[in-house]
Image (tube, rainbow, N blue to C red; front, side, top):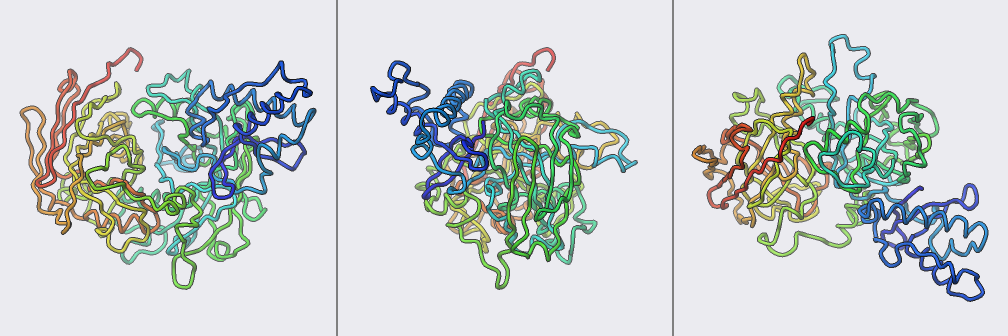
Length: 607
């Protein structure tokens, strides 16, 4: 089956795609199709009264992600409905088509998952990254990758939009195979991993250069020595991929039965009809099963989560400025049996170039919020961690970071984002995964964004309130790195260590600071009889500066959380110390306290 999300007359819908006549696909809504069939069968002369079709009745969800949450029962019902409709349209009455949906070319196709909770893209996952590099003597086979915000997702035909000369000295793109999760799970065994996959889609992995050029005096893709640590390299490279519209997806979610072997697919990257690269999905170093098993060893997967598996060919085919600025240029990516995704390029956001109105933004997730006028509801006291879509963390943002971690103080802050499921509210019981070893616990300052925020000039204007945040970082990722390792393999444990469910505990309720005087506040962290103290004046960049930096090319959403990162106020605790459970507590002067209980999940043989 091919499944699509789309807009018709301003309303988001979803359906299945059939082609009653070659070259003229229709997208049909399951609920409307079943309603038509039921009404048709009630006509005595139809001959269908005794065999009235029944599928989900009134229980069809309104979005594709909602449908995927029905898991196997929903997919089985849809499969029966699609088969029935295809036979009915071909042999009984083709009026089922206009009564149930629309020709595909009459609707606006969205990304199949327009608001992906997890939009995780792997890097260095094919031999092209290592085959000509004699300095790489062996591989650490665990996934390296980055999480994209929802504003990065656009559907077929929507423009890849480059703001603030993000396309200079050149932009880049390549085709990637993506899976869409159809069954929730955590601690998923390797041999059951494919049971959690609903199907596949095509992703175009686009990147730009803004966070390279944001470095004072810098030009192009190189970085000066002070900025050449891995965490700023990741900020420059990966934050450039997180920018709005830079990860087109689609055109459809194609179920597993339609695709067959996902490791036997030709993949093409084209530009305006000309082939730029040809690759093959068998080139992946880490496959679907292994990646699902690994990710779920510390964090939950949910229906509608999207994981894309990196380029199998050239990493980042350059698009030069004259091509990027040509309105006729099209980026085209295709995967055999999955589909072809085509997007134009638009240059915006500087000089006489057109701006990007939020109400007509190419990313539906942004447009939907803009049109609705959504802000964080009510007062700061009503915000909860469960309402956040995105979670941004600054790294190396303390004055102690150079002595402790070798990270120089920078004019441009380092930042990355992780899944919002890593957030939880104070008072929670946090399940520590079986894989975890020693954990570093820190007390940090967090701020929450009040509204849709792009190109913010004064970050304080969009801060709803502040809170203390307890951060947990599982060091088992670092323990898995085998030397000699690459910089990314050494650096990313600091990122993944915070991604487990609930590993970032935010104080609730938020505290508004009308003067935004967040600096100079005493901090304390208490675990058992251990207590450490710090001060928010240790931070280099404040939340206002982080919001301004991030929002330059990345739209932030109402309720998003930004933490300023770890200072010298942290403690390291062993597995033995928390094996029977452990209470942790943090406080920031004037912002209240936050606490949680660690409850380790029992380790089992073979994990």
